Image 1 (cartoon, rainbow, N blue to C red):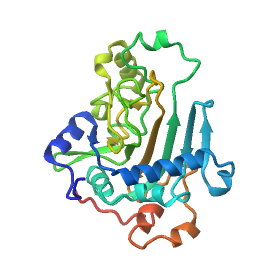
Image 2 (image 1 turned 135 degrees about the horizontal axis):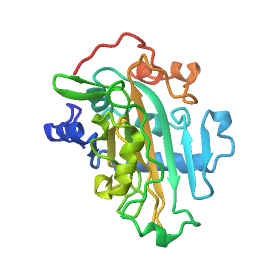
Image 3 (image 1 turned 90 degrees about the horizontal axis):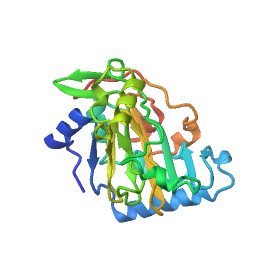
Length: 270
């Protein structure tokens, strides 16, 4: 486990150059087990809507859940993780609020043509980004900052055929039209990097970075947990509003993070 003093110089340089950094083995086995247990219970829960969780199914092999922190303490603990939030604040540049929480459980699509999947080294299913360089990013003290940052926890091992996240490294600092960068990267997959990680590792990345889920070629099931963060004056993603009643139950030290109650009282700290 790392300490909370911030990214190492090597990690910070990696983030600035490529737009992401993999924090290896940050979560311990107990944390992984509790988070996975909560997500599998969620998958079997027929009353999610009443519990303020939304689900988007893409067939029996794929489900995305959102607005998770009220469902189980383990999912709240990830969103407010004391080893992750300071790192997010470092790359955002100041205090943050929770912008969204999501999780994905997926396996290989049984209708996928395996021959087609093996024609390419990488098979991104939908490149996108949530902001872009120039209006969602800035430079301060010679460091790159992005006002929308995500942490993606791998709760299962992800090898080269297991659906690791794909990114276009360096796209977080480019003002090219997104479609042109995606077209160029798909034409030459040396421009694409697919993350491989052991369970418990966390991908920290700027939402200005073009990224995608990758089609699974193995027989393994992938489980990931995602939290998004922004400065507190930014609104949460629609559907991720945390209830005031729940906020009142939280320890005082994490209420601003979960509710965004600090609003416009934001100062750059990095």
